[in-house]
Length: 120
Image (cartoon, rainbow, N blue to C red; front, side):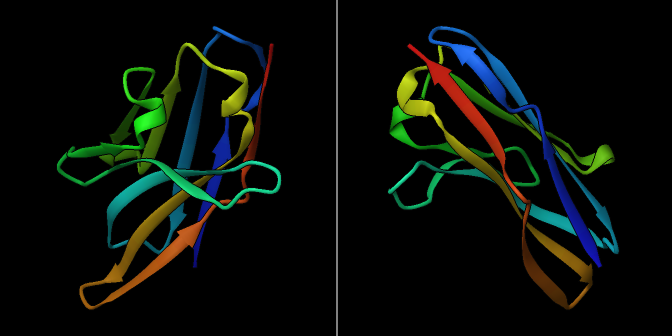
């Protein structure tokens, strides 16, 4: 079994910063891509950023230049540094990861989500 636990959400004023963390634990052979998604009220869940095991990154256009995703493979942890936050960044942020439990079995996992609220 694999657990995915996010932390670091909260309330911040526009222009402020937050750092989200996501720790993956359990029966892990290897972790492939790790990413952050978000879902605002009445909107679909969208990809915010993702990072491959070798460090390649992708970002949604709306956060480029403001958010930075990184990972620590030794700690099975992915981070999302969010700077210059805007009210439209308000959402529940979810960690998502592909985990190999052995050399031939891979599964997609989601965290429980962490609320980020940006006040104007």
